Image (cartoon, rainbow, N blue to C red; front, side, top):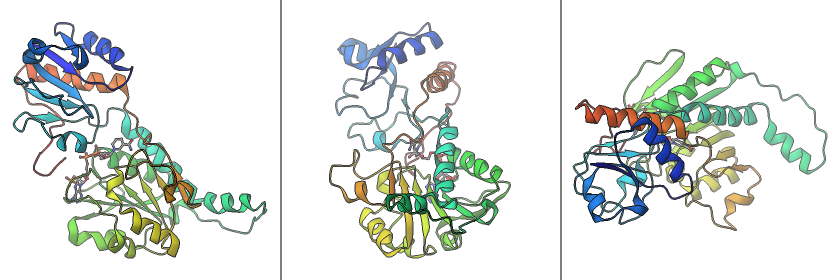
Length: 312
Ligand code: NDP
């Protein structure tokens, strides 16, 4: 009986050591070092974006753990075992990092740093009054889940007016909440900044498209810290050209990495970061996965279980 994990980089050995400290009695194998017998003995698999043959021979798995909050890569895996429970990371230190990232983007637009950046390029000292208070700035968050709620609270504590949108109705103190398809127009109405923190599912793929962008106020700022495929890139570029969007902060793109010469790289109103808004916090992630494996060993229900039908 063993744990098998996959890591595509040199951090793998450190992950193995950390996991071993948390679970001293279980043998833990790096997938690249396993043989047929070890794979047969594996009861738990830990991975994010594993190779196509990762699940080959892992015939006795009791649970699969994603080393990420999003599971789109795993759900798209051609041989993900259909019946094995799949658990994802819940926050594990990422939400706070994403809250910082979003706050940076919201401030960028609210305090007109985009304007000053363009003026700097022209060597123009423009100190005309552009004051906008946080309390007069509305930020809308698509996806008010584990991460979205932390982001919303951070923005509320910085005096922003926050709107949230989710599939199901919720009550979150201090947030103007909208739910479902019927709640989307009210949510989109009069935003200063739109933030995407949705999981990537068939329902949310391409959700930020021409039709959605048309419902925004002119000059809205966009922050995408979820997945690149949430955004229709052609519609985004068109909205930037028309002024519907004043700019965008994109942590994720379609495709990733963004190829050379892609128009987003050089667009003056676009800030790009290479999928670093909420890096996996290794210690917390290992602790969370180890706690879940202990639950499984004790016959208790796992936390962070993914509903494969809805896709998150
Ligand atoms: P959760 O599953 O906790 O929350 C998802 C939220 O999205 C829920 O509020 C859910 O609504 C809502 N939602 C899902 N589908 C729909 C839909 N069709 N219509 C309306 N609302 C919907 O996810 P997390 O907060 O943990 O993570 C969100 C995403 O953030 C991840 O999937 C990942 O893609 C991204 N991420 C990005 C990182 C980065 O570095 N850039 C790092 C970590 C995560 P309801 O609550 O009603 O079900």
